[in-house]
Image (tube, rainbow, N blue to C red; front, side, top):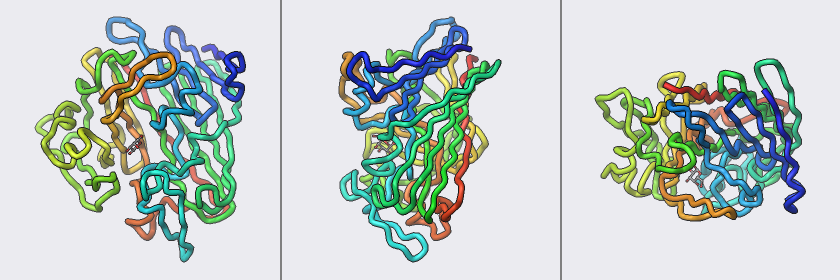
Length: 337
Ligand code: GLA
């Protein structure tokens, strides 16, 4: 395996550092800004190599577009109602960056940090270790935070994400990753031909501003897999209100398989109870290089604790005590079937 590091100083974007891991004819690329996964080039069953992630060639696009492409998300993934939460007896007033609500850790979330990086190379794997910090009371959260996000890519095209977060005061932590997959490759077709093995999927119903209602819905399916076209085009008001999905799905098995007819699949392995699936319902923009992003051009699989858990569950595991360490692992395994 080979590693290339590109300092983007040459195009005036001096803070941006891109790191690519080359695994034979496959390639995966990261960016220090937001500890992002920007590109994942893999073959289909006919040996055609294409990018299965949404990303930008020009890193300054990540400053402009608000969709968290490939980014590390934190301190907390998803929305917190009205930016209000109470931990212990301490009321928090978090940045309201999504109407009246708090989204994806606020305006100075993990996605906005320029992470330091280290590279560890071994025979069959490469790890990129991104480190950064957040100061006490950034976006209203107590605690100085040390954040380590370790991406490990192995020869068998397995991307492992290890999170390790420490705090010096009681705070909230619920990180995830916001990669958008399109297994058709190079954005040439939308994700409506993808399937996922949620089976009779249980999902959390949400209100019109995507806040959990505390009630669950079930998608009855005779098949082991559910077709995205059926869900996105479903007359169920839960889905039609957004012209698609923006919902937490319960992890009922240890893994979730996302597939396409071209033989590519991604297996997500996680111990998290929930996977938030967002199907880029409202996308309609072009980036600096003219790449066009359109409705359903990608979908996320955000493994996490439930969004707004702190307001739904008094003993929420999103509370990290002073001096505590949060650690979790999420794996995305690429396969050709
Ligand atoms: C999450 C949210 C969506 C949307 C996207 C990014 O997945 O649930 O509503 O905000 O992030 O834009």
